[in-house]
Image (cartoon, rainbow, N blue to C red):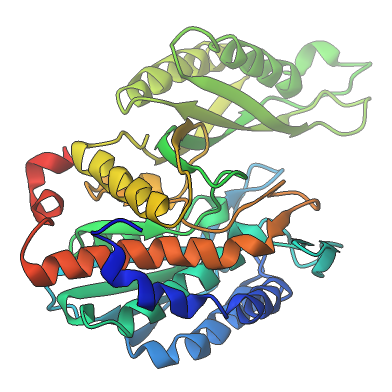
Length: 420
């Protein structure tokens, strides 16, 4: 271990005997179904986390979120209840403030067949959300316990947000992340690392949209000429939108879902398409919206056809600031001292780290466990990653707290220019 991290060794060692307990807590959380729209299940996870965090001594706050609006297959706006968010703060007056975040929801709905955790081998479990993100939550809490047991804890304050809606883009909790950004200097988010333990760096931004096309129904035999086919018009929109792929570097359009029509003897008068856009640069948003609007205008100019576009860019691209680059260097230094060879890679995926970065806060958003096949019934977690990942976060927290207590080294996190 490096000279800089040597004083931390005895505190990090306290995690060595906790693998079984960490595994037990991960399984316990994963076997509570917490699909994003299963508010009752998400709230059950939240209540369990309230109990699990009680000994950290922070001030807990349960926060209601507005319902999530979704355009249904009929083109109507449906509202879905979301679970509650849990915010925990400790030492808000400390000179250095850290934001820690982990989502409680998964992509597996209440009626999913994927509900239980099973052991695939001695070092691997398979289960809903074990890697994304229940194992990460357990890593976070154990790292904080190490910080709280150290002599440097008073020099650093922290704020946790357990949010219930990350898997659907954090529509309700994005405002809470933006609010936290006004108080903190850096962020630590517990999405899973890459399977080999590497961290995600630069991330693409993302927008989710729904196109609703209205036509005119008519008898397909007697009065076909009086109808206006919404399915055909929307297919033209999808084709033109998909043709935008390759027109601007780093921007991709993905038509993901289409629904419309009914009996084949009726000219269909309604059809919807849900699609996703990914982009690398904040300025790409304006180009995308301009191109889409031109297609919408062309389709809507047809006699008897009307096309409406719903949705927005919920997450800006995560572009790494100098402060964020330095935060990654510190993580690599801590990892090296722990025998972890950590690299940083760009990714097309996005998460709450995008939200935090767009608010000017440097962050590492893949401090969770090692595993893979997330968002599928093959999701797995490496049990042996629990303790090393907790040590990595603990080493980061202890180093920052120790530097703060000694008055050297954290100005780079407090300098606004370094965050641009």
